[in-house]
Each structure stands twice: as structure tokens, then as C-alpha cells.
Image (cartoon, rainbow, N blue to C red):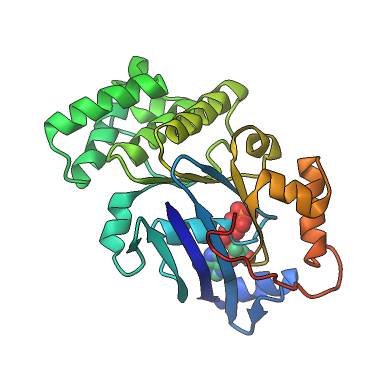
Length: 277
Ligand SMILES: Nc1ncnc2c1ncn2[C@@H]1O[C@H](COP(=O)(O)OP(=O)(O)OP(=O)(O)O)[C@@H](O)[C@H]1O
């Protein structure tokens, strides 16, 4: 189980960034300080898939980068099976498999060389790499192009290799930032099937997306972030009940407008407690 509680994170803006933010008139900005996250909380249990939703700039990537330990929050906690990984960033690297939109692969290495390189960074031994690698290659259906250089692969193939590289060390939790963006229907389907297979293995999966059909198809839970604050966290049924909307798109829009995202009302952040069902 992973529990994320009350994350906050501010960035100091460069002069250039400040000009860009000024144009957006985002209330999270105060002079050169931009509070990207104010209060983000949600939880995802063993064998659950949680979809992270929110408008552009809401704070989804910032949240996921904090989960992966690439960024340190100003406050808040992330607990995976009783270990606070903010206090133990090395544990975070072991426990979390992270796929970002920029998860790098080395173009000149083959797919297999890339995956094995990252496995070694996680101190896996050759037997473990072979054993778990073989299962993973089959599961992701990437065996046919394991020996091709990454630069010769399509974006869908590269995304599957990136996923393999992110989970080769058998993390306890999988975190994926917009894993299907820019992929065609077949590649998207393969990624969604992989997420579903992780749920069956009992591994919590947290993924951000702008595609509500992916949420409807896969997610057990949803967390909606608006302007750096969680405005809903719970099951899909609870989202539908709280908004009285069966249609997910309408439920999402209703949640945002209840929180003042479409009007002039301030965001009245209803405190979402981690672990809330
Ligand atoms: N390093 C940084 N310095 C300054 N501002 C930042 C930094 N990183 C993110 N931000 C700002 O924080 C806000 C949240 O960004 P984030 O990338 O987390 O949003 P998002 O919800 O993932 O958006 P999208 O759906 O467009 O990917 C944005 O306004 C962004 O410009």
C-alpha cells in the first residue's frame, strides 16, 4: 500500500519563468515563488490502479516526480508498507518503478542492453536479470526487437522498453506519468494490458493521464488535482455519487467546478484524508 499525505512543493522562478507564469495569472504564484503543490493526498492499495487526473499544470508530474524521489517536497509524507520514503530516498528508488515522459533510453544501445544496464544499477545479479528479464520480455511482447538499437525502434516499442527498464528491479509500486501519450491504438492497448497485469500481481499502480477512457477501463480509484490541491480522492463509484454524474467526463468537470476551477470562487480545498475510501 502507498499513502501520500499532504505534499507541498514550491519552486523559485527564474526571471524568464516568472514572466511566463505572470501571463497565466495562477494564484499559486507569489512574486518569484510558485507553489506548484499545496496539499496533495491519496492512497493506493495492493492490487489497485489509481488514475491521477487534473488540468494542464495542475501538479500531476510534480507529484509523480516527488514519488520517484527525483524531487524533494517541502512537506508531506509518502509511506510504502510502513516506510516513509521521503526520509529514505534510497528506499524510494528500490520500491518505486517510475516511468516519466522523459524516461531516458540510450539510443545507441540495444533494447536489452538498456534494460540490463538499469538492472545492474539496481545491483541485480546476472541470474536475477535473466530470470525476471525473460518473464518481462514475454509479458511486454518485446522479444522480437530486444537486439535492435533503440534509435531504430518506433515510439510504441521504445515505450515498452522504457517500461521494462522501469520495472526490471521488481519495485513494490509502479508510477507512470502519461504512459500512453503519443502512442497509437495498438501500442496504447499493450501498455494498458501491462498495467492491468501489474494489478493482478498485487502491485499498486499510479498513472497520470488526460484520457478518461483509460480511467474508466482500468482505474479502481481516482485522484483529481486542481491547482496543486487534491479535490477528490476515492473510487470511481464515489466520484459518480459525489457529483451525481454517471458519465466520467461530466463527473470530472463537476468536481473541478465545485472547487471553483471554472469560476471566480476561490478553491475551497475540502481536505482529503489519505486512506479515504
Ligand atoms: N522546476 C519548475 N520550476 C518552476 N515551475 C515549475 C517547475 N516544475 C513545474 N512547475 C510548474 O508547476 C505547475 C505544475 O506543473 P506539472 O508539470 O506538475 O503539471 P501537470 O499537472 O503535470 O501538467 P500537464 O498535464 O500539462 O503535464 C506548472 O504551472 C508548472 O509550470
